Image 1 (cartoon, helix red, strand yellow):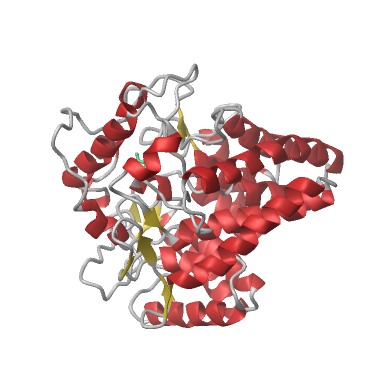
Image 2 (cartoon, rainbow, N blue to C red):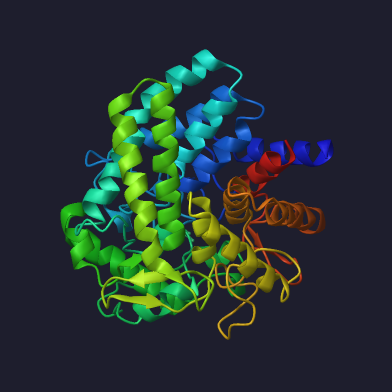
Amino acid sequence: TQEMIEQAKAVLRRNDRGSYTVPTHGLYPFQWNWDSALSALGFAHFDEARAWTEIETLLAHQWEDGMVPHIIFHELDDGYFPGPDVWSTGRKVPTSGITQPPVAGFAARRIFDRAEDKALAAEKARALLPRIHAWHQWFFANRDPQGTGLVAIIHPWESGRDNSVDWDAAFERVPTDGVLPFTRRDTSHANPAHRPTDEQYKRYIWLVQKFRSLGWDNSKLHDASPFQIVDPGFNAILIRSCADLADLADTLGETTIAAQSRALADKGIAAMESLWSDAQGQYLCHDRVVDALVESPSIGGILAAFAPIPQNRAKAISARISVLAENCTFLVPSHDPTAPEFDGLRYWRGPVWLIVNYMISDGLEHCGETAMADRINTDCLRLIEKSGFAEYYDPITAEPCGGDQFTWTAAMVIEILK
Ligand code: DGY
């Protein structure tokens, strides 16, 4: 155990660039939003100041409208596509123009709760609180213009689950004409069989060009996007972060933020019910453009357990994971292994991701589903033992996929073992 923790710490140190960490050398040479916030949890176990710095650096690049971008291009590196020139967001320190799952609120609260240096934690949390709150408010103002209580992502990269089967049908509506020629870089760092297809990349870039043509004006992007998906996993993270931020604000005596955050979380939880499917035994995505649920049994609807969902829903999700377990060796596959679209190696179309496992396990634990929560954590450690600190793993063979020496994978190992 101690040896595994030491190895995990070595991964974090190796990817540490001083005030931020890169997800992995080569494939992802900048700061990524949710990678950073989750990696901070790992640092917090051995260097609390460094953990706070990670989140501070992320929030230091928040846009004036409240958005926190998904990539911050701290240093030039032409080994990544699409780089700052493609995004052209016009920032002094270049950033991308879309966002990512808002785990920072959850992470800040957890690091605060566990802190040994209480004075430092109070100072850092107090400074971060209004910024994270502004980001949450940005979501509801710009990605929920009808006030449903749930937000849409407008690009698959925002979900973090880039090539999930969930987006396939909606992606048919995203054209590829007018996409400027480009060269992918990801496939020179990682096995192309583990990555999205060229066809998907053209659509990713079409959306970037579209948003860029609108000057990255968030008051326009949602309605202009042919891709608007309400992802239960993404919303669960936002709702959980709002609820956690409310608790943190209460502790710090920030009553206005506490009340506003709690109201957002409560409204979100109630609205999540509209995504539940009895037939699939889990939550589903909602395609806002055609106003229909997406019948795709992927991990987004299971990650929903990270939010404070009702007990009966958590129980049903636990049962759903038991069914998935009958068809794989390691929980939790990012897509149902019995579905025709399942691909155990290809990014979010089947592989297991430790960060998602961690969030599902944490949510189930909260709801009293402790046996399943423990089982998921055990599978995480079995994967590490067999295949090291990979980006993701085949849920049947444990084959390590994508990048290696991966920061957030290592951070989750420290979280599970400590
Ligand atoms: C990538 O480049 O694969 C990232 O997931 C996009 O953020």
